[in-house]
Image (tube, rainbow, N blue to C red):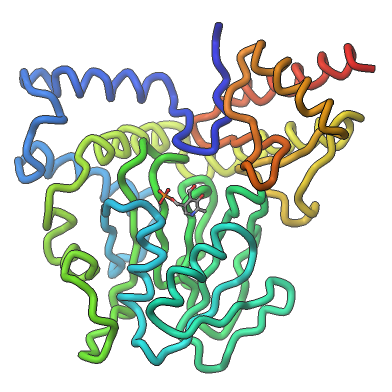
Length: 348
Ligand code: PLP
């Protein structure tokens, strides 16, 4: 049975991307070698990472002085490396308290500097804060910044679940990072965009091993060590796909359309109720509940039997979450909606 994968990540990619990735793993460009067995320092792999970097720059019109890095360790490691590279131990940063991933950022950064917890409504930020960390899309809670805040400090953004699916006003930011496994590849690699002006040279800054210095990776164009090569290749394939399908503007429009279809059903189907406040609803992850625990259990069985995959909500939150990243076709969202309607027609 065809599966419609609404998983929050690792997530669905277009079939053509998986096919090209599989072909490259078997025999990369008719070289008789797998992309997985060539050195990261070969001309062939340098071309892969070079084109991937150029495509990110082109798709987002990234300011020319910004650096684009490909790093392992997931967005999770960036929650530590961002403060390590940007501030000194006596400095204060602020993190907007939006949910699960902002809490993770708070935990990670607290080991390196003073961290102020900023209320998302009041946007209280200490006058001397070095930056404000925002989670542009809280994947687990299903809420999103639709407009990034205008504040007196630069922004650092965890864009793991909406990078390459929405526009970015670069003038507000000094650092943006995103793991690939939702909108632009498979797991194992993180794209980090940094304005190098903000990387501290101060000898008093947090002592970090060389592998965690952005400067190390800038100097070596992300090839300081053997980075996860196949995930970078998957990102290149997905970046080409995004370019061929209308770029970020089109990804954004698709995301809005898919979310509108999904929320329309959640709001009108008597068996379901949306989780996030209306104005903050994520266009990447639609979180919703059944009207009772029994309805939830029944719908999960009903939907899974019909090829709906990965919609179970995060364990601490429960309910359902339909993740609709770049690789998710609108037809799958329409199909999920039809399953919700069929379920309700039977249940009523
Ligand atoms: N930040 C956000 C918003 C996420 O959704 C995730 C993962 O789902 C992460 C950070 C962590 O990413 P990783 O598991 O690649 O470290």
